[in-house]
Image 1 (cartoon, rainbow, N blue to C red):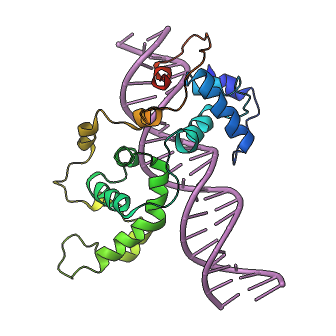
Image 2 (cartoon, rainbow, N blue to C red):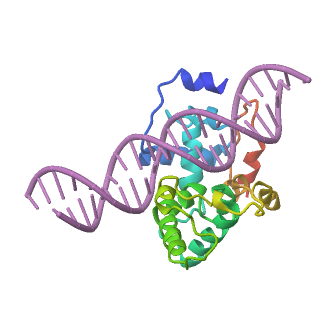
Image 3 (cartoon, chains in turn cyan, red, yellow):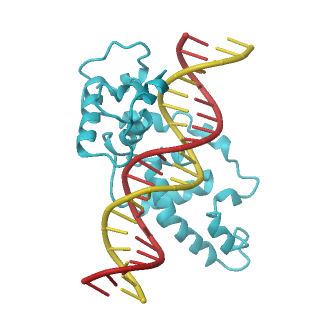
Length: 196
DNA sequence: AAGTCATACAACCGCCGGAAT
DNA sequence: TATTCCGGCGGTTGTATGACT
């Protein structure tokens, strides 16, 4: 359905222009989010639904923090990464205003190296030190090296009420109000999240 | 000053799970 | 119950920018 809609149009890729940002923001402000795949066209965008969603979730939605991570945020990321592994959305849910994409990038750019360094600076007897730092460099030393008694997937359940979805659409108090809602079959509930 | 390399960030891709039909 | 569709997630890639030679 929506896939066919997207297939019939030549979709733009690559960096978003300020005009596109403005169009998407204005559309969501007016109509809310009802169906990413279908929204792009009436919003005047030649973008895939996924592209629109990503742009909104990661950059345009209210409440997003940009810029440097604080020491506290970095420590939180490191702590949570030790517990959760590469579950960026779960980590992001604990850092208001930060997105999973941003955290993931920051981890790969800064923290992973630092974390590796810290591990390597540990005494020889330290049990959690990776045995082969060189090969781990290529495998990006994921916390898959966690001991088997550390619960991983199930931990997510303890965050059950928190999801990037709720984070994405909440920011608790969106600074705008939906003016009207297109009468389109399949409109979904996330619209309500934008109602003040 | 020019070329090369490394880093950081933005965006895309493919897969998966849940909801709707 | 099976199928389809959408949204979300994590991994990966592309590009811009700065540092270094």
